[in-house]
Length: 168
Image 1 (tube, helix red, strand yellow):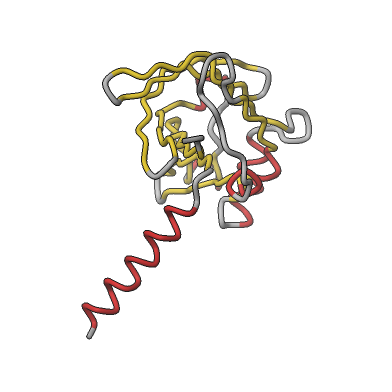
Image 2 (spheres, one colour):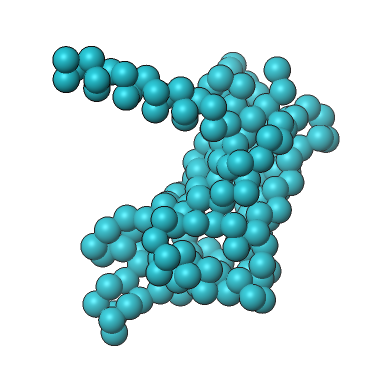
């Protein structure tokens, strides 16, 4: 019986995940835990993206739409990105290639008026392209936050994860 409930919950969660085609998440670490900040407005959007020709996505995300599922962590995240001066984070696809079923994109990330370009590998799953890239706060001249006089600190590394609904 317990095994049946486990499989039912697993299948429901997988169905829920498959239905969530658009997502931008920023995952990070402190010296004591992890955090995940999701852009809820983008996650709930019904946008479908094309990667044909010059019609490449340009995602303009409001910093205020990121939620870290912890009020204090969300406030710290927004403060670190200086939301009042830099209210948006932009992810622009510059180039997109497909070779032997593999996808690669040159992506420009603009945060706090600093721009960095990254090559990101993507895979296709159920009409979505998913990919992730390890970036750093320091790539954007951001000092990771510290609390309690430096006893608790955020590590420099961040994982930027994408899931974009695509046209068939």
